[in-house]
Length: 298
Figure 1: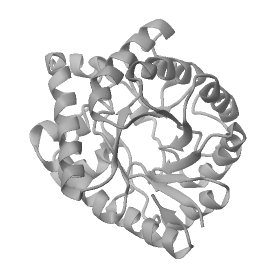
Figure 2 (figure 1 turned 90 degrees about the horizontal axis):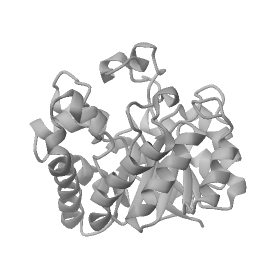
Figure 3 (figure 1 turned 180 degrees about the vertical axis):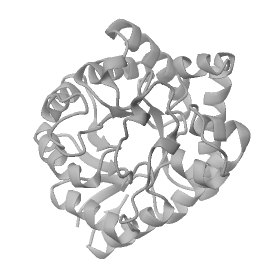
Figure 4 (figure 1 turned 180 degrees about the horizontal axis):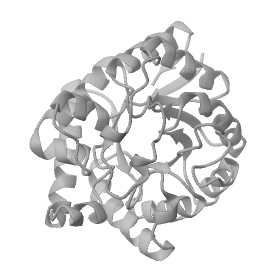
């Protein structure tokens, strides 16, 4: 029997589906503003499904995104709102940890637009300090390059909490980051800069086995949480994209996703969950499958 940390599933896409509103470049942040309480409801559904960690809806709350929407003055209030909804869900569930999410600066999947190192470190540190009093750990998500890994880990140290690094990998070659750089190099950076776990996220589930093989030699706890997109389209890689440029897979049932995740566990992963288009039914089936295989969900 292995103890497995069960993350929640995707927040942003789940909010988009529940709200039914036209997506905007602010993505999950816009839904949180327009539909108070919905974020807490999603967290609650993941806890009910068996997740042991709630990942805060703070992925997109960066100055560079808010400035474009003339909302930069709400930077602190938006973090407070997201953190409050996570705390409310945990209180209602009576259990669980909260992971403070730090998403990429500027854009996801686009390492070429990541800011210079010193600028990025300062911006990531600012977010880490917003999160620190209200979370149990920091999770640096969708890290697409080695430069991104170095900057976000240095910035996240400001929180004084455990930090997990999660990289996004090429959907066809999971041994490489979206930048084309080797995943194992990101693992070495994680070790050098004091990360307490290394993961891969927001990539095709088929790519994760290679990512697990690249992360396993770090000796850190490792794992994966994949997305359910058919592909990352060219339209989504433009400036200020909206998620309607992406399409959900139709072949990724909860049972199919659980089979992928059990394969990662067989390779030594001890942290699993889901990312975009992986919802509460997927997490519920994954929890069931893990227990059926003799593992303990913690």
